[in-house]
Length: 463
Image (cartoon, rainbow, N blue to C red; front, side):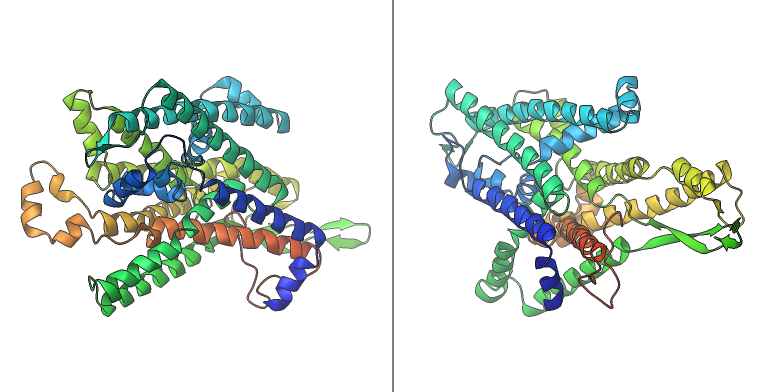
C-alpha cells in the first residue's frame, strides 16, 4: 500500500488530478457552512431532528447536511440530476434531441447546454417553493424566517439557485480535471461527512442512554459488513461471453485464432438508477409542502407517496428497475457490439454473427439488468425499513388486521441512522470502487502495479 501511494505521487499528472479533486471537495464542504440569509437555522435543525425518518432526512443526506441548515448548497446537485433525467427520457421521443444525440460530440455538447439551462430553471422553481413553504410554516410556535416578505423570497431564490449552478460547474470541473465522476463524488462526500455523527449517535444509544444493548450493536455492525460484502460482490460480478476470433493469413503467418471474452456487468448502471428514482420521488413531497390549500384528494395522494408508505415503496422499486434498463440502454448497445465483433472477424460459439449475435447479447443483458435492478432495490430498501418500517397497516381493507398481528418494529421501524443504510453504502462503495479503478488505470498505463497488487485490479461500475 505504501509503495502504491508512492507510485501515485510520483506521477505529476495523477498527483495534480487528485489534488484538484480534493480541492474541489474542500470548496464544497466550505460552502456547506455558509447559511442562507434570513433563516432561523437552529429552529430548522430542530425540525429536521424530529423528521429524520421522512423524505427530509433522505434529501438532507444527499445534500451533505446542507438542506438541514439551508446553506447556499441546500439544493445540492439534485436539480442537475433531474434535468439530466428529463432530457434523457425525451431523447428517444423527441426527434430533435435524438438527432443531436447521433451527431457525435457537437450534438452531446448542445444537449449538455440544454441540461444546464434546465438545471437553472428547476433550481429556481425548487428554491422558490422552499422559500414560500418556510415563510408560510412555523415550528413550535416560531417562524423559520426572521424577516418574511418579497425580499426574502428573492434572496433565497438567487442564493439557492446560484449554489446549485456552482455545484453543477464544480462537478463538471472535477470530472474533466480530477479523478472520478464529479457529481458522484459530491454525493459521496455529502454522505461520508455524516458518518462520524452516525457513529456518535450509535455510541450514545448503547453506552450513554442505554436504548440498545451491546448485542444489538454487534448485530448492526455485522449487518453493515455483510451489506458491504454483498455490494462489492455484486458490483464486481460479471457475465463473461466467450468470443472466438478466426485465424487469417498475413503473409506466411497465421494471425488470430485466439479466444477471449466479453465482460457484461451484473449492475452495469451502477448507482445511477437509485439516484434517478430517488430524485423523481422527491417531487411529490416538495409539492406536498406547498399544498396546504390543495384539495383533500391531492392531500391523500401526497400522503400515500410519503416516505415508507406502500405506494412509495412500490414506485421506488419500479423506478429503480426502469432506470436500470434505461441507463444500461444508453451505455451498452448490443447492435454496435455485434458489428464490432463481426468486423474484427470474431463470433460467439454457437451463435451466427450479425443480428443473431445482437439478439443473444440483448437477451443476456436483459436478464442481468433485471437481477441488477432487483439487487439495487433490495439494498436501497434496507434503510427505509430500518428507519420508517413497512407501513403495511396503512393499506385499505387489510390494514387493521396487519396492525394487530405484526410487530411494531416491523411496521414503524427501528429508528436506525440513515447513514448506515443500504443506499448510502451502495453509493459510497460504488463511487469508491469507481474512483480507485480510475487511479489504477493511470498507474497501469504508466507500467505501475495497481493499488492492490496480487489481488487483481478493482473494476469500477463500468470497468
